[in-house]
Image (cartoon, rainbow, N blue to C red):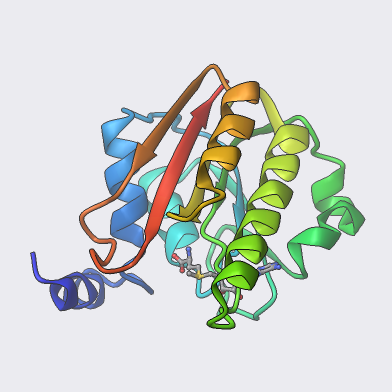
Length: 187
Ligand SMILES: C[S@@+](CC[C@H](N)C(=O)[O-])C[C@H]1O[C@@H](n2cnc3c(N)ncnc32)[C@H](O)[C@@H]1O
């Protein structure tokens, strides 16, 4: 499918972003099927992933965080905050160790300076992994966007040190020119 076709498909199917098809492909491939999952959606604006999950799993409960505001998504408790401050949000903090699924589509602003950008991506990835470790339950699943760069191997090793299964995905809806990839971790 042509890249723009994903955006048109999202529009036609009433989704907020083409990003939903990336998450959908990963969940289908890993045969994810928790009908009443508790989800933490990190970097959730404009709300595409949360909207998709609530439609797919109407019994799920969703918590989302982003620097940017979003139009309300029915069923999503949204907090406008930096991921680094998530522990200060009492409504989320008191659910530590209780989430079935932590998903992160975080994308830092790029400076164009390769070393700086790689290091920012890595720091953000490590922060989301820290959050996943403290908020997931004993059988939790983590899906995180990252980028192909010199620090990717380090990050994957960090994932492997914690999860019993780690897999890499490059969904069809992800632009082929972009270095974006997704790591999946299952406890
Ligand atoms: C690609 S978008 C997410 C798209 C979303 N998954 C969807 O389907 O609609 C990445 C988001 O990460 C957010 N973000 C970047 N850095 C962040 C941070 N430090 N804390 C919280 N959100 C952040 C951005 O504001 C942006 O909305």
